[in-house]
Length: 396
Image (cartoon, rainbow, N blue to C red):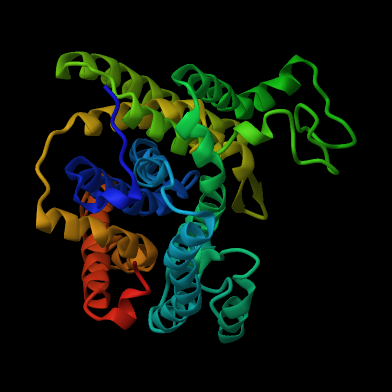
């Protein structure tokens, strides 16, 4: 059996895709609600562990969003210029709008609170008036703290640029050929761990660089560069929709549950081990200084790591198995998830200030309250913006 879903088939009314979009969006919100607690290592062990274990559970959020793009957009059924025009406007316009307005949200909000420290950046870092104005043009180079979630849009533009090019290949490729591509891509998921292990077996790098397989200061493009990254999730989603598993619910769960649990355990306990190995804690003048090596600590949380792929694949095949009729309210909520994604980070800041230190609950429940309240506030704002054609451009 072959199933092929394209942009021209009104994908907003595919029931299981709508559910997956909503779940993935909530997972993103929850992931950011965990961050300030993860940052408590060395200060509060209970809060840190709660953030680490719950945050590890949320790592499928972005890969699932990327796979949804693969389901809905491959194969591309329009010419390249038309595809670029349609898709880029839906990404670049919101990217510019939220890059311009979000720093003001933070500036005016933080100017009226006494003490805030969400994530790893304090109020004083970049939230002055001059710092805010600086962010109004430097976003052309990259996102900043205020616009952290917008990193996804920069990446998404790159995927959109490549989709019409790869579309011809996936449309004509044999099943075995797609499997070969995916097999090489899966291998690249191990490279971050090989890089961590290599020094333990005697690899000392070249010219001060510890990169692998041809990568060095003058060449960031190694052997498997062209097979790595989020593109693999796009192709994987296309493959799973084109060649869906004809499994019963029992077999699907028998495969998905061990994969998810295994991936989660590697993610969570690997992250804890990385923190133990790559956080330097020392005392200077009676003050405890904590210096994390985030580049190494977050390897276990990489979206393009084999453990996160295990979790993502498991989730996707379970949601793909769901049979549900299209529902208008579900599609409307799913259509608002992009807007929720764009503005939720600011509401995570607000909800943290509301609940943390002001309510006597375990950290896990505080994170859940933060997630629900942030999601709802972002949903309300997105719904308001969706009411007029002019403001809708900011979220759709």
